[in-house]
Length: 250
Image (cartoon, rainbow, N blue to C red; front, side, top):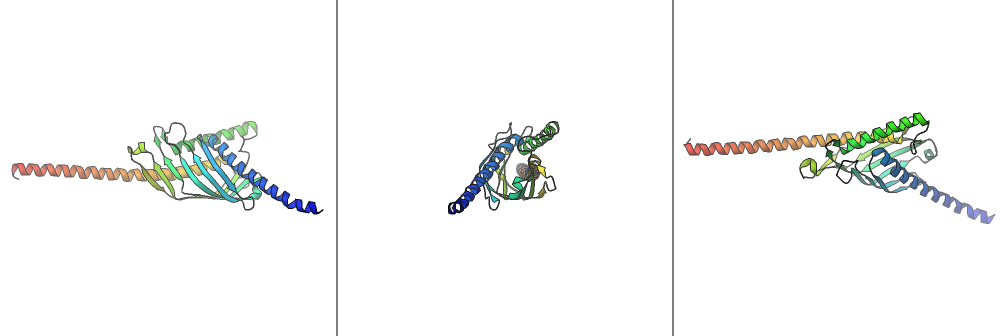
């Protein structure tokens, strides 16, 4: 009896540790498996570190590459993002994420002949979502990773930086501040939403913010260039007129 009583706490510790390793490996595997399929680009996650006691933790070292046709190294890099899961929901058909908090994402915006990289990523997600829906109708089952539904109660992106590609500005590097993004109740409802649809909503918001930021910046750059050209022309013409006056004594 004494041996059994001693063994129970040890067994509980082993189970908790196993759940912890399993949860973190499942999250990491899910990100690196579903991510590339949906985005059409390389996706890597160095580590998932989520507590099995609180459901809170961090996803560390997220890297999202670019689709084919783009030259820059990555579309997004992130040191860590804070997450908070509803642990009870992990064993249900719908995973509830109470919070995703992303601080200081490093974003690279690249404009190519067929459009920009974030618009390409968003289009890839839309295509993947349609293919998932089509497969579900035909096979009465969704592809691996899409059978689980998800609900994200709150998603926040702050202190983002957008690096405009060198080709866009003739060799010059410009870094812009990205306006904060606050989203709520993604997939809220009885059934929730699929992971790819949730990704589509997040990337649509991200793409919109990046696009408006870059557009505003380009307008400022264009205005600055136009003013500089006007000033140069005025100075040149004014100088020439003064020279002519000097020559003709007027």
